[in-house]
Length: 150
Image (cartoon, rainbow, N blue to C red; front, side, top):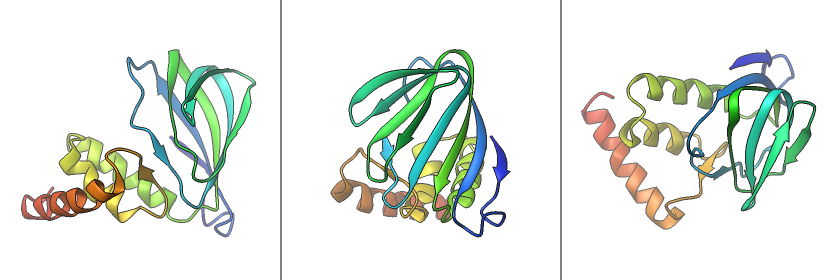
């Protein structure tokens, strides 16, 4: 992922990145952004996009939007896929991406990811497990991560 226009560059109005995906056997976890809209332009390859429960195939040249609050996930359909992606407003999305990258470098387990997701609930929320389970579970995992210095 390469930042094309940072939060600082746009005064917080948006964040623009260029992202690359490689083929995946399954979709990553479905999530939503409670207060942000996303705009994508597929530059190369094909992207499998699950939006609100419906899967679509987006190819180079396709443009699509994901409004705030809509559940979604995406993965490369085949080979390498690149897209330009805008998130508005930016909020703390750059910090979220940095935290997720660090968590993946530590192994990417739920123990690694839960504290990041919990700290960035204004930017992103997983759709499963339900919030009534997710809140206490992620709180406990966050404490365990601190104890284990993860």
